[in-house]
Image (cartoon, rainbow, N blue to C red):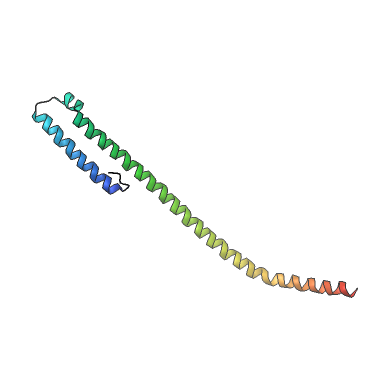
Length: 116
């Protein structure tokens, strides 16, 4: 019964709730009062199973929320990297003529120093 799907766990919970209702009806038919019905081992076992499944559903939902946050953060990170790459390409394209001009100036300076 170890499932990590909310839908499966919901079905399990519904099934145990039906079993619990049937057990309570059976006890009521036997004229057992409510306080004793609550102490019945079968009722306790079914209620414990329902509580366990409820906690499992809550845990699954928490895990799904964490995964959703992680995927959103990952998508934002990817978008940010793409934006940074496009900005850096634009900056490199703008800086390229300046760098070429600087290289030419350096070549001229080298030639002058070589002549002296």
